[in-house]
Image (cartoon, rainbow, N blue to C red; front, side, top):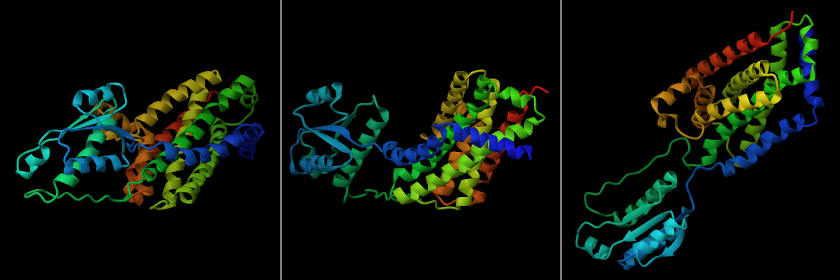
Length: 360
């Protein structure tokens, strides 16, 4: 009976806050409706300048194909390489293509011919992808039909249209759960410390476990609401639905919510002020997010950094949710991730109970 009233108290506190109920409803909707459009790592709008020293029909056709590509902003042709390089130095071009004199005649006579592609590597990703796109256009025009040439065909599995939103929506679910179920509990106990209401709980016979679990339950319910909203928006706005079992999506989300809500309460237990709690939580959130594989593959990390993913619950969640949501994986496909995430979340829940200092 006491436990029931403790949970009721938590919901009353959330309801009385004029800002929190609106945040819980509006935040996931805004994230899911806006972020998939702007968090797109597909490289486009690459500024390209061409120096065509050959000026034949073939080379001009090559230039026109680059000009019509959706990946490039064609900045025109320059008379020589030096003037084209100035465009790069002033930031007006990312890639310079120089076609040598006699390029077409060399190809006609069966001689080796080269096209130089110079990329601005200040932004390494943009430069390398620009060179890749141009190389594909070059191969498509000049290397078809050549003797002894190899034809490479690509087959994309699970996301055949290479829709980046399919890749990002599961990650956005993780971000919303992390922020809502992480920061709100972080402000909970320390907020009661600042207002003095925590002392009233400390003199009651309520056990530490009952008190902490009552603190966690509202955020599990909030997580259920958040993940439901995310799934509905994913289907209604983007036409993207989960390829696997939705029960697995909810299982993973609840485990992640358990971790972050417990972790938030741990920080709140050790903090004396709201400012201190927020700064500590933000420190860990940034590290967990950037080293989880959410934006970049974890295998690209150095070995010492990759080793941290074994203790990163966000990595287990991101890996598992994409397996279920995008690939349609079963429980057997994510058993390792569920075990890792569940183990870390349970450990944090126990720590949250132990770290709460109650005056007996």
